Length: 138
Image 1 (cartoon, rainbow, N blue to C red):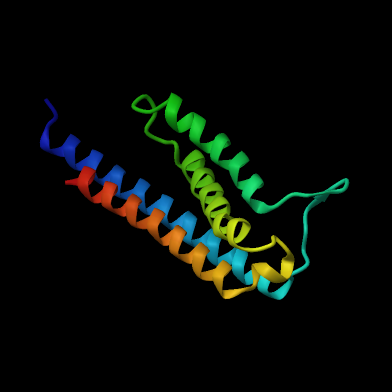
Image 2: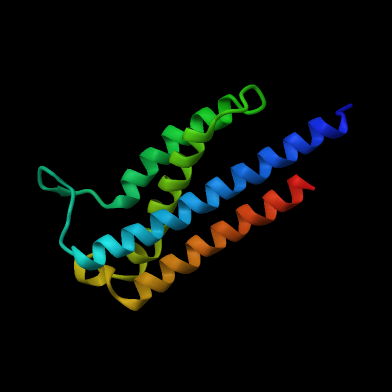
């Protein structure tokens, strides 16, 4: 059985982790949108392939998520993988609606359906993380 101070420490850790996840997703969405608003043709091309930030995000999700899954319960300080996971999730969710609902061009990324679709999906992920954080931190 945990003592009251151990329980409070776990509760604080859960809150900090939740806020790091939510903050990294929100900041990533905001910074990507701001950067690509001012530089709409900033593409990452590898050879003839245009690499959308959805795919870069998936790499960060894997790089951050695997240590979180493997070391869960065995390491308290996994802040960097948690932030990498949140950044990757923000990147991937930002482009999810854009790549489904538009033709995938740079001009389409600036359309309202792309912006609001990304904002809603990221907001839902943040709300989900907040609810889980609140339930676990009690």
